[in-house]
Length: 290
Image 1 (cartoon, rainbow, N blue to C red):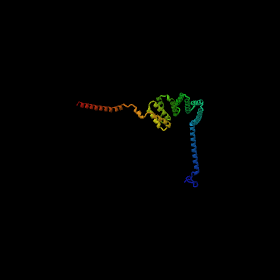
Image 2: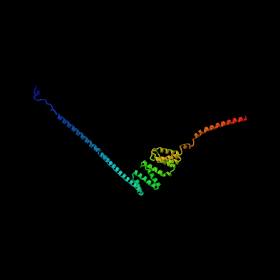
Image 3: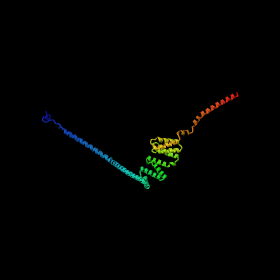
Image 4: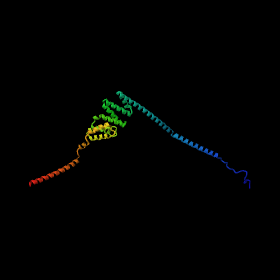
């Protein structure tokens, strides 16, 4: 055997050096840290791209929202100041009316009609119409009420009040048909003016010679729980002044069918009596001849 094939017993076989557990865990930690750094860089890069694309728009929207909120707060504060000022003007006008300072009160109310909010405009117009009515200016008062009734910005109760007051001022000059046409929308059950408008409507029906319609509205008013006692007393007096319902039915002309039905039995009876009396006359004549 050659020397090359001989093994040296003194030299051990080569082996990989053992790796300790601490070094393995350190390597894994470094790998995790490296991965986290990569993720953070990716996220940062994505945020930068989003900011470059939508950053200006986002900031603009935020600024607009802040400006809108600030404007809304300013508007609310401004409206409160205006309402407070107009409330003071209305109170001042009422104070002037209490001391009979009509000129100053009228000046304040006219200013409220021009510059005030719808609610204060309505109150001012009602007061001006009442002042005109008390001073004998009926036509001016009616104009105020009619203008108020046609203002669609106002709530329905204000417009119904103006309508009723205008009708009340013109009621004596209106024909029964005109009064009925004007009062019907107000004289509805559930309406705030059902009581007084219904009373005037009943009177208009009586003037128009329609007692049945007058009785119907009066009975509806008396049966309503919302009708005051004082008004119920007046309504009961109106009901007693009407002719009884039976008289109204009997006063109607009979129909043609009923006339025929009532007359035909009488005709039959008369024809029978004529035949009987004729027979009797013939028998008495024969007896006389014999």
